[in-house]
Length: 323
Image (cartoon, rainbow, N blue to C red; front, side):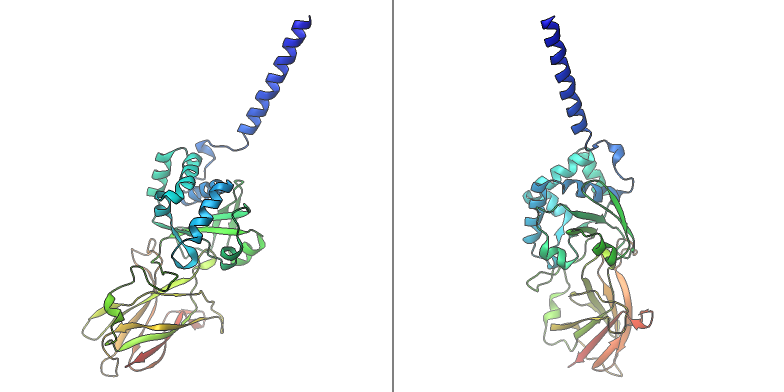
């Protein structure tokens, strides 16, 4: 009888142990069916889940801290291929069901930037804090997107106020890759080296910006396409500028120094230059091109407004100098 009692006791503890293993194993569902259907949301969910691990958060924090680009951006695919992103990539693959599933998902999406668009988050987030959200957008003009928490919960956001009210330590954003501006001031893939030539006569030396990348974007990357009456066209370097608003005094203002050269010709009444303002947003949803923020003709030195208006105010204004 004593042996039977001992056997029953052992079986009881084995059953309890198995139950605990099952409960712990079910704490996080890793089956394919638990993933969101939309590819961008599926990636946001997986990234948030990966960031539930403090070691992964630490590796992401270190990589963003060491990024050479403005806003500490990472090029998502490059980061995953780099040794610094190995922990992150492994966690993503585990969440999605393997390396093949991760590669399939990435093939469905454009090249992406990965960063914290809110400056306060960049300045204050510490990797020990897992109270965060992740959003992945494929249309930079969207005003609503689903964000995911590391615990798997989903929250639809449509304004920066909602993001503030969420009381999170950081909101990570993935969106179509833009041309990068180095934190040192240099530009990446920003146009022809001739733009540095002091022989060029027409240039921009001040910019007013009322454009915005919405609640999920950061700074705007603005450049200009300029052509003379003969059709000779040039693209300027990219100017990185804070987002603005469409209120009367809501424009973000930047003194462009050194000035951005637009065209070698001097603009005059008889030789006007046609300038188009563009915002580099990756062009994924814009027919392969970037956002067009309006045009204007330069005939002399002065302040010019783009002809695309938000309510009552132009998207951009620029002071043009002519030598």
